[in-house]
Length: 335
Image (cartoon, rainbow, N blue to C red):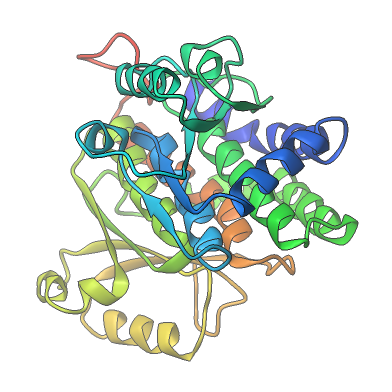
């Protein structure tokens, strides 16, 4: 099986491992992280690549719990001033990306507080951190797949620990969503394979907790299928770029919080004759990929929604005769 497809299909098991680890023997580490965040005057979330996008659900949830939250790419942070009382949180699969290793070393030299969330607990990032949360999901091939969803899960679990909502009931709802992913992954692949425009460029649209998935969806499509992709918040898109929508337009609308407004926006987009794939839980409109609500907060709904988005990228590559994950210019990417 193609490595990217195998990583996609392995996600339910990987997410279950992460949930079991951080609600079981390593729950104290999660609580330590939540206490550090609650007591910090300023929070800075940072990373690069898909690990940066995996921070968006945490930023969405944490900004509703803490008054001073910043989400900034690490490369940008390296040229910014330091402010007293800041707590830095870095997500990284390897902990060895150039910017991540360099910036975490600088934080260590300055004795700044740093929480590292990484798949590699022996990495430079981990050695420089005040607290390390080990993402126990297995490494992906070239394209970050399980890394994206497992890091996003950890960020949301930290927020639930802060809020006091990390309960057995929430764990049960998460496990139900992982079981749904396992039971439906082959059917989702079949549904994606029947789409007739895959291999074309696409625009990924969302809002709120889904923005990180829209960004990563564009990245997956570009990495796997080598076609141009873009992303934008749906509200910004309707302020101007909507002018491009006609029969040549291909869009992916990820609606993790369906409501009357998003239903109206969906109808407006469809009236313009574009091709729009919709991924939504319990949506009040027609959707190709209907996800159960799972009784989960919006930030967690990203996890099952990621599955069809990843499969779109994989099948787009397959339709173009490409092996997703085989790169022309890069030997390895660390994120």
